[in-house]
Amino acid sequence: MRDPDYPLQGAERRRLKTAPVALNVQQRAIVAEAIRFVCHKRCWTLLALNVRTTHLHAVVAAPDPPDRVMHAIKAYATWYLREHRLHAQVAPLWSRHGSTRYLWKAAHVEHACRYVAESQGEDLGGEL
Image (tube, rainbow, N blue to C red; front, side, top):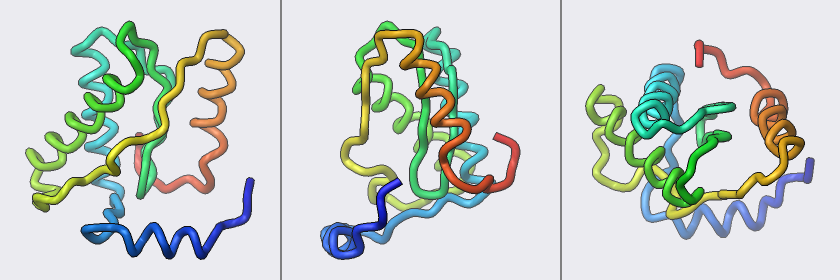
């Protein structure tokens, strides 16, 4: 793990157009539900999921490009939060992009799943 880069964090925070969103336990559960739904609906296989307060990690096996998967996950998560009246803000909920990767080897998929499940810090509570 790298040490926090506080000057970079400050610069990034100043660039924000709206206040950062921190998901509570209920919101995190709804986001997880939305991700499971979109994966089921599109016949994707959700291999690992960890919804955090300010971001999420998911490992998804899908025939679609990672950017398309990420876009669908963000769209459904936002829709679910708004449908449950847990996020009424009109401003965007998610960052403009995110980190996406192709995982070509079984060992890489296994490593990513372990990382998502075990390397995200303390348990935030709630059943996800």
